[in-house]
Length: 562
Image 1 (cartoon, one colour):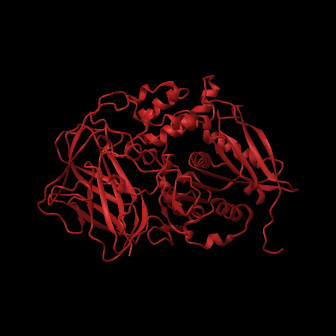
Image 2 (cartoon, rainbow, N blue to C red):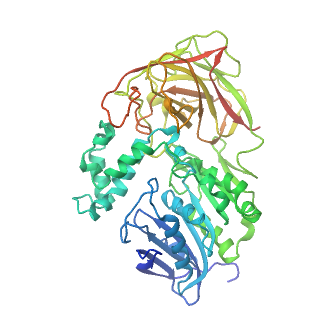
Image 3 (cartoon, one colour):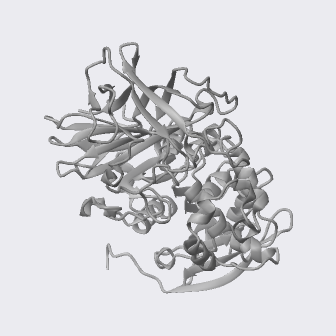
């Protein structure tokens, strides 16, 4: 029937071997239409255990899901993406070319992936395999320091990822005892969930958790603040159209920087014009739902990632559905308004910075305090004060998987170690689209500490939606490469860039900024000693001051779009 897309029966081959240039064999599962002819290939490379998406194959593609080097069915030694010596650019290049040469391939290859598979995609793309035509990627920031935001270890997620996902197969290969599968590891992790998080020193974690990956864990602890990969420097080497996809509640929402980098610096003008960005209200790897955490963003928020991927690859690998090329390059969802908008580029050039200043009479602790946020600059005002005790940190409200999601921040309302600054109820709505920034004047009794800021939408019923956040580790306030400790009691100005967002603060709502020094286990606890937090057991209380007066006007700068 004209206009109706054929749906193919699917056949699957397991552990199909591909020889890399150094002779190592990598294995993939291959799903393809049970039909004569040649079809374009869609490739994903993963360290998590391969799985083929039969929907893609039923849509007329050869789907290749490959275990990366040293993982599951593939031979060789696994080297994670943050350690020197990985071979994923070469392995990816070789696998693209091998896929193009399969007897049932038509020679056109698309690559896709979210999170780690997205990293694998970018690695091979910069090597420019001749048969690579297009990519569909998301959930990966361009820099490691945008993943470990502010140079602070995201301990909850990293431990689950390393000990629960990567370590089991490494334990199996090294002949260590179980867990040998992610299912077994998750069961152990859930049972002892608090133990590895609170353990000090982290470098002495017992083998029941870190066995099989102790060297990897120690390397991560020592180097997570370094830009071990910086894809911004490699966008000019990439020469294919990419659909970039992420969510405002994805901790790796700085995926948007891949789009910006490719639109500005892609290898050719045609490639730069062919970039597309889609940002919804979603969390990391959540595949486009309407319900995120405790918030329902409505039916319009729902996006079927697989269907979108098919449409994207149909355009580039089959020459179909070319209408996607006539759409605006950027499609983004505005929370609060719960509507999609379009733009030509990111960030939006029409966004205008608007400063909201922090005010208080010296008692901004908790939402019941006298902290205020307004466009009026401060004059003579007492600083806000609180004490941060790493033994009793502010706890993160997020998914059990340690992924970001909007949960009601009222659960933290009794904590005296959070300064709260909020506007009066808004008379007119304020639309914020872009990356907010906080200029914070603060002093600490410690030689090193953290400052965390959260942008919150307070609803009329009191629901407090954490919109986005930012963090700075004081020793990295000027440079990740040249850290410097604090002089206790001295006032420093901190520039804290928050994660990007798009939200309409509706009339009747309040705009709120929370300032604290912990958000655990989203981020690791600063011990406040100025030493190696991962090798020492000492934890000290830090006494913090936040200044908001005429000479030290702490403020949040919001990118406002009319």
